[in-house]
Length: 131
Image (tube, rainbow, N blue to C red):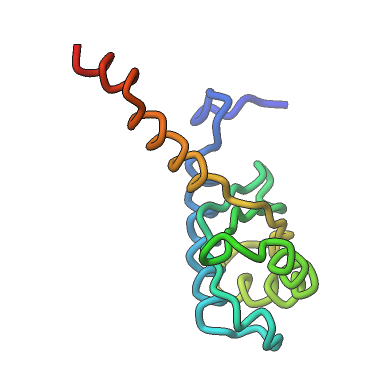
């Protein structure tokens, strides 16, 4: 197998990043507009924080969180139930050879951000930062 001469690190390639961002925007628009024929899913407000794509661009993992952070179990059940319709709707906005399989994971970025803020507000950490 030949080595990719444009990418020599362990992280995602430029193409993976570009396609992931395109899928994120398209999926976010589809969920926002309510293009899916499931009224339960259309009632939810879902934030798509990031989409990571496999090197062959056939699997896209979307990191999502419901508005307010509550009801994630129901959200995942609805997303799983409507996965094929979401895949079709997202692929209409893409010019890829294959429509990627969509997988959904909980986006924990906001939780980590809150933990970091709490840590920086501790007296011991403030004292160390002031020195």
